[in-house]
Image 1 (spheres, rainbow, N blue to C red):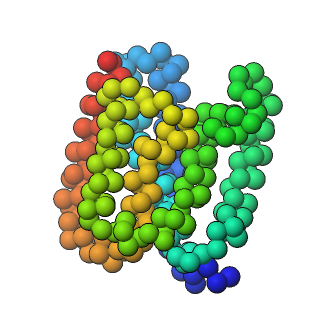
Image 2 (tube, rainbow, N blue to C red):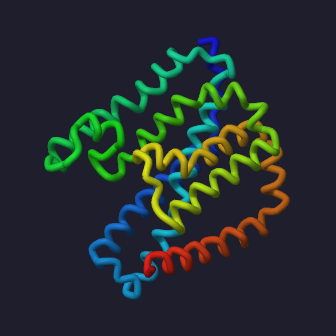
Length: 236
């Protein structure tokens, strides 16, 4: 197919997927522990710590999705064939499991089936898929305007907008848009970064090799900061 690039497999992407899957499972298991303990944080500090430092997993999934899309598709891809390929891989499994959850596991869901499919409310963890479908819908546009996304000023403005939405949602009041749109607005920068990362692989690799120890130290520091911040916000 002319809009598909020659495929080159990246083992590193598979490793990142495995890491993300592990930490998503950790998010859900630790969240259940906190929920069953009625958020007795003093009794479960380790659980809270693991819950908070695992939160990078979902944004990382969005980055991986964008990286792989940009890696596999040319900028002049045909929109409808592209959508057919992408949606057939993700929508049918999503539809199947949504129906299982909606009718068999959570039959007392207050949302209509149509709404549950749109917002991913058949089960709490399915919220991710409608948001990913939004990214799939707009990816061809983002790919075509890549040269603009790659501009430093555009990148900086996008980052400021992203931080604005995150700050409002985190410190003031949760965003009141429909749930897939909420998640989209809180993660669109990660998707853009995934697209950019595909075009700057060698440069990123050089930076990582050069500053490896500093990046590890910074990551450890950041994980403890997130724990303290998460604990404070939970208590508040």
